[in-house]
Image 1 (cartoon, rainbow, N blue to C red):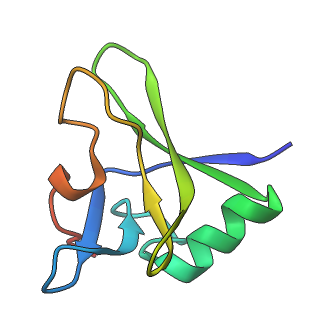
Image 2 (cartoon, helix red, strand yellow):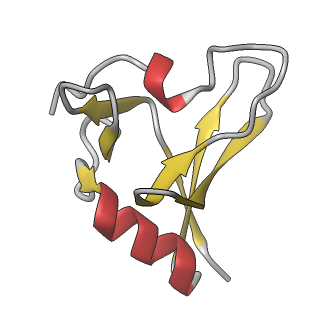
Image 3 (cartoon, one colour):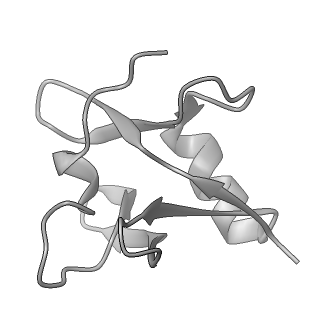
Length: 90
């Protein structure tokens, strides 16, 4: 069973692409994109964005035209979109 990791911040490059997942004061943070993708694909870890109502928005791996990347699925709120999360502070 995968270990869950909550993500509150992300690192982004100059194009706005996610380069790392972050959570302050966690030994795993920041987790580089390539490592997080491997974690998810191997089933070792699951990452999610926690919502105020207690729900969790899963972070998943997508195969895009430029390679694999991390994303959340669109829903009625933008607060859980990875590119809308604050920048990493760790």
